Length: 112
Length: 112
Image 1 (tube, one colour):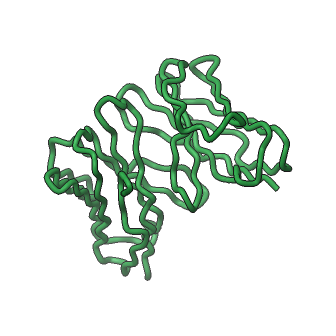
Image 2 (image 1 turned 30 degrees about the vertical axis):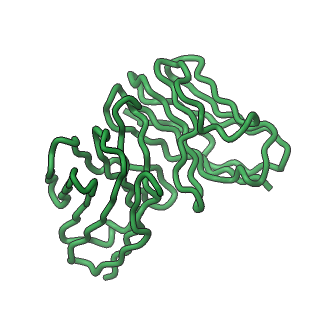
């Protein structure tokens, strides 16, 4: 199967929380990342977590990591229309320094 | 910092022509990556450099693709001859050591 898997679409209402999920397969992953891509733009780093952590919070963003299940999630609190974008999960692996493996991205649509 | 700069933003060319994509990484970064993004395959790593030396080019599709990094502040990705199936958005990214990747805004290539 894919190295990094994400659901392709998520739709939420403005003001609700969004939860984007990701699973990965390589237990040697060192860092896990969330990137955001807006139309016509490159990928913008949102946040990242080291593999020995289980949670990281940064303003409206909360990252949860379940290393046993190889599951990563990104929660966006109070989702706004400006959060509409594609969100990519990525992992870096020990021995492949700097080389990220990306999921196919989750398109988040925020309805007013 | 201006970030990773790619040029051109858009390139339209005819099948068989040579295409050169350019990238200026962030000053001080020692890793440079070329990715290709398509709807079907998502983000694919083509090649990456460390200190101007190619480390892994296993993602380069075929001999028509070549990449160079003559110095720490410039890299090119060349396709010769180009084919319609090369149409995609090509991203350059750079990083310092194990830090997260910083992406340029990409070059949208259309080969007719």
